[in-house]
Length: 314
Image (cartoon, rainbow, N blue to C red):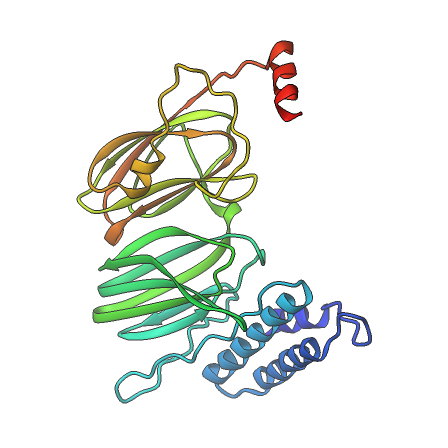
């Protein structure tokens, strides 16, 4: 409550300024009212519910002021048999939790609004756990597919595109204290890719080097994906149109299609043109992988090559 109150207090909003539209002022008042409700709450449940409402108002307020799509607040958690489900908030701003069977819609609160993010997911106990990506704004409602679908315990990281607004979490057949936790973190929190890197399940790795060839060895019986996200435009193939380096003729081919649509074990190569991110996804959270990175020495262009490129531009 203290952190939320301080954030509202330092909000630079001129109520008579040009960006203080009626919609913006309504969100501002909703945030103030939520803080008052949280301060006066007599139970933890009521305080967390009020903070959830206030946080949603602040997310909408930021979106309206900066011209981003305005998300609709998450739908209330589905009630379980004979009892209401508790709020997913924990009092920690970027963490949502839940337990048992149910269907919960979580409004995504990003540390860097308008940019991709990292989801750190932990599941304990037994049961199925499914997370779907949603876009639910004032102008659009769309389901963007499954981010993760596993059974049993899971500890991994997922890549969260910039335009998603909600997560739909569905749990079923829960046993043995089946609990889940989702933390939204900035992409900068991704683990740095080592020259030799072994891992298991879902992961997002940060690549900090220059042009290189990545060799990917996969061991799994399910579908899996490995893709590179450009650190310059934060898009992946085929959407990224940033100019590639002048790769030498003798380097291995780029197996992007095989890594994007493959199934089962395999060995592939992937060209890394510049710093960026590697997103590794394994169906059902299983499978293991081994990555090796080999830098590529690209000589500077000659004067003749520069003149040739200049002529092509003209």
